[in-house]
Amino acid sequence: MRRSEKKIKDPGEIEAILLAAPVCRIAMANGDAPYVIPVNFAVSSGFLYFHCAATGKKIDMMRRNCNVCFEADIPGDLVRGGSACSWSMKYKSIIGFGRAFFIEQAAEKMRALDILMKKYAGNDNFSYDDEWLDKVCVIGVKIDKISGKRSD
Image (cartoon, rainbow, N blue to C red):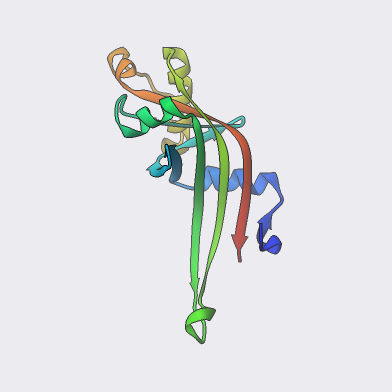
């Protein structure tokens, strides 16, 4: 990291950003072409989880190459400056790398969906229709490396 004074060194602060950020962007590669998608997500015990339709471009790409990069941030306030180049932005962000995998078993899908629902709904006391579980694709990402940056 070029600006080492902006590096977040506290793992608890990195986790707090992941818990608070509403959206995560997942980057994939299709040969030499990058592809980024925003997803609702949740994290637990070194894994990131999201769900999506069972078919589509991201599914095809992850089946060919499971390596992903992900980014989440909490935007802050605009910092006005006296000249164009002195303007800035307050923020907290993370970037991570990992390997995506497909969660196929119903019980594991429900566990991952409970983690997602806990983040967005505030509780994990939900039931899931078997037909819906068969149709939804739940993806996990084993987090291999993660770093954080902030500008106060």
